[in-house]
Image (cartoon, rainbow, N blue to C red; front, top):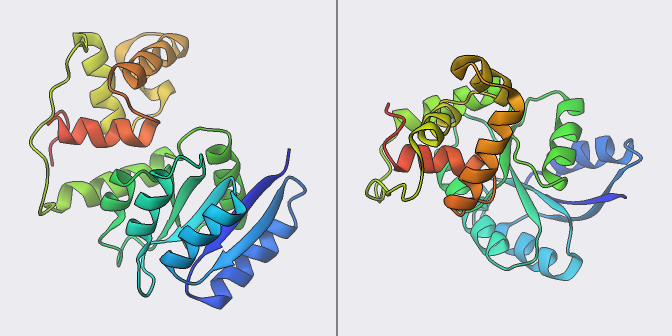
Length: 217
């Protein structure tokens, strides 16, 4: 199955580079290109791509607002954010808006292709090393309209432990080692947490861990 990708970035050179690397992958293809958030929303409705590579900062409607509209449309299209860590202040907001992960613009091209495949398969892109950098950014910022800590109704003490470690950016293998349980057991806990907390993927579990106060700056 070929994964169809929509490129949303206001810089033509960035889109051209992404288009070229996608063209070299036999299982990926570029479905279209957008230079603004509004255009990304319209093209997603028209083309129904599997994944949108979305720049955070674009003229007019930014990537955060566009992501919120796309993920809320029921199209099933997944969104991967393009960010530069040192400059983008809206990454947390983008993940809260429903993005399935994030890419750093200076990542290796092979890693970008792998990220597209991971998200298209229904998982969230949370490579541990990059995740910890992003979590550090979350912790360093005070969100103006941060919600009150959300209750974790129905979550057991053990599930709470797992959720806390997810929020810290640990992988399943690292969680298993930390709690002295098997990776299979960790996956079972993850499945239950996703269902109990009505979370779509691992990215949302990280956000819930912060919102619930399980992970503190």
